[in-house]
Amino acid sequence: MNRERQLAQTFVALSDTYAAEFDPLRLFLRLVHACTDLLDADAAAVMIGDARGSLKTMATTDEEAAFIELLQVQTGQGPCMECYRTARPVAVADIATEYARWPKLVGVMLESGYGSLQAIPMQLHDRPIGVLTLLRGNTGRLPDNDAHLAQALADSATLGLMHWSTEPTRGDDVITRVQSVIAAKATLDIAKGMLAQHADVSVAEAARLLHAYVARRRLRLTDTAHALVARELDLSEVVEGQRLPGAP
Image (cartoon, rainbow, N blue to C red):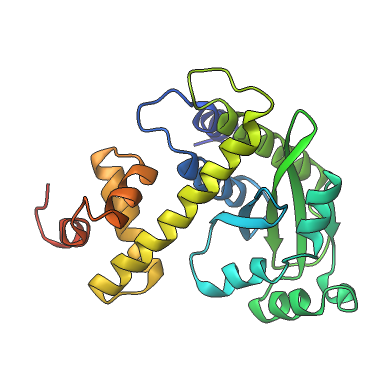
């Protein structure tokens, strides 16, 4: 597939909010994977601000704890919080030079093999709602064309999030919508933990099983996670439905 067609399909996927299986958590997953597919980035993550202004991780391209911890150490400070507070992009061309400002973040990034970072603001009507973070193994700034495309992808996803309901969203509803998505992500994390314990597998493998289950049955990820946590869906159905040969 050529790049132009891939770009077109990506923007359609991020803006298709009226599909029956549309799910805001899947929206964020599409966004981060689109970034690593289309941009000069090795990893990506989406963080959304809660009512108190604390950033919560919604999706990453890497389910392993190291990458999630990398983002969590930014609580209260770091390039993502700076981007969120100012609603302006923050580029860190060489993370090693920022040790005095963000020692924990720099240490974790270098240990994880990342040399640079780009934070892209996500906002609606000048109201910041979150940050798209791009990590690169190499040092240096993200190419300008990639930075502009990353902003366009983030803007598209933000609009998709705010318009997934068929009813218009009032300005005052933005915080409510964002809080609902944060709660959905917390439920998803609990569901993955339950699956991991039930199947005696890693959280990353539990996430793979869950995503495969909802994709095969064209279900909403949020609804399925809620059903698991509420014990309305048997954990074994998700696990064994993916493992057994010839499963429907």
